[in-house]
Image (cartoon, rainbow, N blue to C red; front, side, top):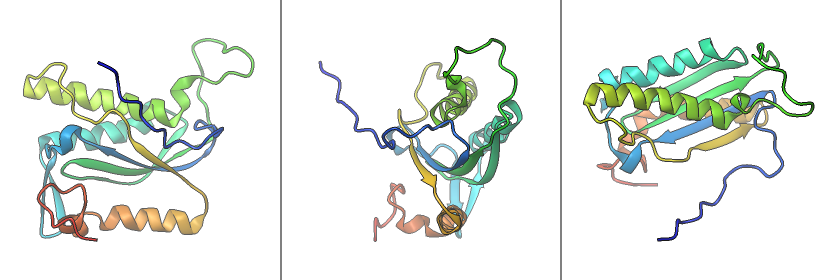
Amino acid sequence: MSEKKRRSLRLRDYDYAQAGMYFVTVCTEARMCPFGEIVAGQMRLNGLGHIVQSEWIRTAAIRPQVRLDVFAVMSNHFHAILAIDDRRGVLPYAPAPGLRSPSQTIGAIIRGWKAAVTKRVNQIRGTSGAAVWQHNFYEHVIRNEDDLYNARRYIEENPARWALDRENPEGMRGG
């Protein structure tokens, strides 16, 4: 059985560990809605949703180069803006010249967070090894103040637009 080749959404030749701001979206496996529900335009996190939120906040605590901006845990996906700054922390080894620790890339940051959430969610549900997230995620390099403003507004307004959201399995799929 051949594995379907995924099309990369990454910018060619872009260093995703360089200082900058990034907008990310991560969706749950099969668009399941395990993190709570949206009532009257407000997200109400359940216990699993609180795990997603607490692990995201913990991301900045364990990675000194990461600063968190706005984020939203939705029923079946997650949006966030994060910044990587020039504070790199001390590596436990000396990397080869010209090489950067892969743990400092957007991909590694998101993979680590997804793994931490998955482990905790599966412990609670008793579903060791079950997928919680889709394999990939969407990211957008924020290029200017207008881009940042629009991304923040999108995240903050996401719960109020849930009825029309394409990620909503029960929505009208409008737009």
